[in-house]
Image (cartoon, rainbow, N blue to C red; front, side, top):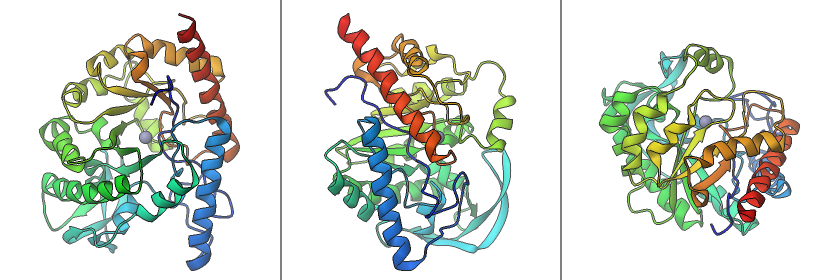
Length: 343
Ligand SMILES: [Zn+2]
């Protein structure tokens, strides 16, 4: 992008209350069949409108057509039995009842491609589309077929690559892979996690991003964060390998977190989506707070590579709060843009 400090969100936005219960993860749909299909499109249009009204530069679908950022993608694949459930530990953090991989996983049909085409028709702004990353996908399943995390991740990477190529053809400018698991399984990330991600982006000409965060502001995550101490150095484990990877953009949690920003020096040269909005609080940042986070990041990220963003998705927030945070992000980026222009 030519515009300096182009803003975007990590991905999800709250859904309207007529579509799904607000402020709830995995919230069941309130509509069905044809009405649901129409309702999802309307919600996507509204999510786009909220972003445009706030002046967000790189827009998304707000993840309005999916119930959950990982589960919805997997639901569209064959080889996973959602009736057969086992309890596993997600990201070493909390137990959840998850579906079972019972046979070879395959993508029989596109998952989000029609939604992406619809969004493309609605706007000329650059669009970013989020997909779950291979490692985060395997972490939400019980594998009774491959019996190898690495093998299953590799299969998912191939499937994600098929989807990504069709999203690119639909006019998506940036394809983002969500990999919160990269902040947990460091040995695996370096052994095969980043390699699997590179398999997922193979042959793409559009830009690619990886989003690595400390999770939504839900209790299991905030409790986990309390155990991490005063300095969160998780990124230090994966940045060196990411720096040499083919991924163009790295999306990170920065505002209100305990991440020492000098770690960003380790990915110098990459574009960085700097999380300047905390998604774990209802308090709306002031534009000056956003500007301050961006100024701090500018010590370690070249101005033409800094993309102001949110720490994570805003799905669990109220629409009012999310909308206020979008405005703050936009206004904060504008403050710093003016400062850079004056230099
Ligand atoms: Zn996130």
